Length: 316
Image (cartoon, rainbow, N blue to C red):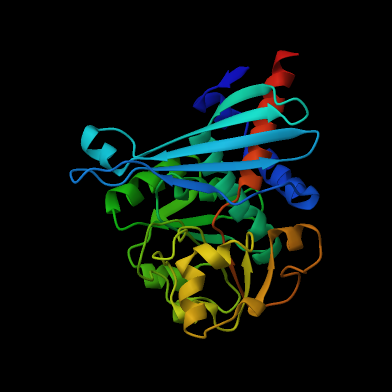
């Protein structure tokens, strides 16, 4: 069994290859059962610890299982609060093929799925990108989007100004015209694409500030308590999701639906619909688009296969 570390995993997943790999997997499909969530023992002194188990497979090809350990109390220990590993198997025999860094797979496939959606939904001439949230995923968004749209200007915003400044400096070192947005609402008004990757529980993006032909990408809300956009963001916009599971998990959608802003029938489609051409993307039409993602094990499997096959090819 191969053991593939974080650096090698990252090198095997350039967005120019990862985005088409995700598209191909959304076209061909795979089996994705609901994720398993297990709460471990907790003490009065510590926050609850959680294990997520996320399997996916294609018959007679590959079986993959991602395990995510979430330990909030690790911050006090000077350790990361999340550890993730991915094990890839031969689906025909059950033989373990590779142990892959799960953190790199998760962050890069998340940014790639966002960019894949933008390749269908964002204006073809979009050149001004606003990134809201400068963490692990947010820091990858500019690179991913530049693989699918002619992005020339990037603004970044984060509640932590130092994090925003650090990301802008990193992007400028890559010869990208990047700056810190001094005013979030003002930056939203100017952007062709707004991409949010935060842990917010109250809306950061106001729909009234969005441009008439803009694309809004919402990554952060993956629990019912989380939210990045206000209700107005969904008015007079075509709304897409990565998978239908988003309607059950994200406060971004559950809240507005409970208030009658839209219904499940108002969802225009998901990534599989777009990839297979069942639902048209933006095309030459105007109007606003919104994409909400919560992540899927399908994306993990596509990324893991790419990592494993790249490693096998380099050894041959």
